[in-house]
Length: 299
Image (cartoon, rainbow, N blue to C red; front, side, top):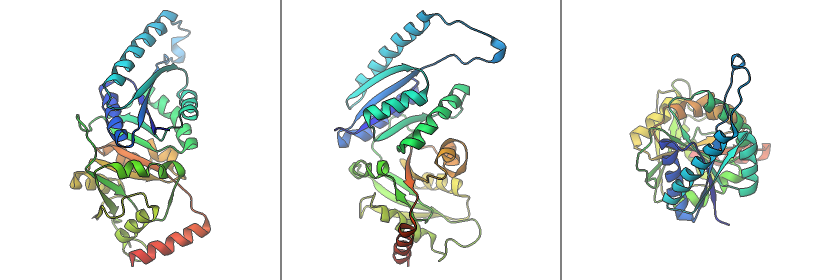
């Protein structure tokens, strides 16, 4: 079964770039895309009262969307299918995930969000939480002509974690890119950097313990005296990274993606695509074993 990436698109230039990047990333593993366009339902306020939308409006919108999706799919370098659907993104996306069993969800990230964007994100978040799918966020300001990443920054805080099954399944994809991977750690502005004061080594060990990255092809980089979100963005700029990997912990995944937390702050400021990999909480025995491993490797 070919790896499938679902690309949410509104047929904007930014969404087109996100689709092309997704296709480039999928090509080395023989992947395919499914483009999902959600027909825009009118958003009303109580003051507007009842408004009747002619059915012809929806028919014409669907015809135009189908034609635009077919043209976009035709220009992509990997096989691509498409669907234009009306309804709740929560329901449509949930059904599509069950049907297609995708490995990745891809979304363009806009500099300014309007009311519709906020409503769609609110509907998407529960699906992302329940499915545990990795998410690729492509900023509107990302490269106009993207290519395969040459340098990938991997953000880690030194705490042990375990990737969920969907994140682990992306290992072959990451190893297919001709990229150097750099483990990035941001030391706290004040106070000790971990129990042994060696946060960078612990971050490196925590990432290595996942066995996600190629065994030999990675470096390390540390930013000091910066808040975590600013430090990660600064590291991406310093390294001229083409992509940033962020590990999303289950206890903060829903809020951290779009609303609050380090990931949200990075997403709003980072000029390069971000790959969010959900993790799982460690059991007590796993936490102890991981802590011992990280401590041994870091020492």
